[in-house]
Image (cartoon, rainbow, N blue to C red; front, side, top):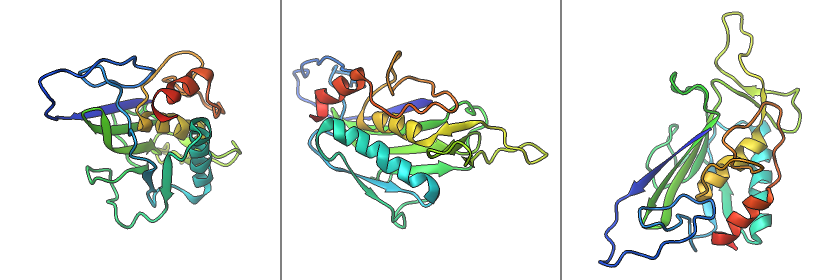
Length: 211
């Protein structure tokens, strides 16, 4: 899974801000952690492309982050009539389940784009690769996705936990970067891996900005 962060240029004072411990967060050029700061809860739209059968997984992933933070972090909306069918810089935050994906990035399960000014996130979008991967919510026997199929019509993908993937991407959405070891922010999510609980390091990271 890859994440791409785009910094929005901003004019700061003559004195550079004081650097912070990264706590697992992406940092700006001044060594400050980027996050949504006090701009909470964050509006998050489920685009109409997200299958109904997978939406409960999104709400559980949201609840996992919020329970750890001890506060409401997200406000989820299911009316996507006000957003485009493809991710864009529209000042709105959304999750997309995309049946088309770049041919040179087929190994990506998901991608989160985060835009910030100074040290505050302004906008973010989560893209899920439904072209090359299949997903399940709790039951691995019920797969959704993998629009990339062989000539015989057989799916090219094994099953991946949608809740685990969304939990990871929401971490990026909050400002966290990839980490190695026992963490939901580990780069790779294995097939049929139900990695849906925050590790101690994830809880510690979250407390730096959101508790």
